[in-house]
Image (cartoon, rainbow, N blue to C red; front, side):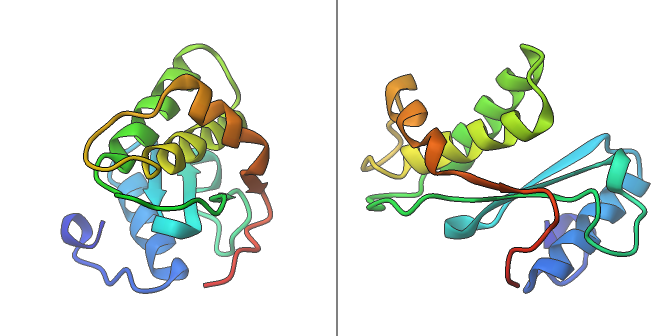
Length: 134
């Protein structure tokens, strides 16, 4: 995110500012991994607000991380699939974070199974108010 925008991305607010820049340049939505902390989604509905309103954040469940290789790929794949099946963005984000977390349960690039990701769904917390700590 920092490389593509040229902005610092050390804090959550920095990442949100970088995501807003991508939206101003034509992106429809921006999904950003926050590593162990989860992910956030910002789309045109919340793009130009000055505070965190319109920002969806999801806390990742605690899991035993064996490897994070492929976690972002799993997150993006499940997010895209959820949107394509017509699920609301909140549910798409929940599924994305569950899949990314499930991918971390494996060594190497092993993709998570549907069962593994779905087992974590109830432990992913969605925060529409943007109250995750920086």
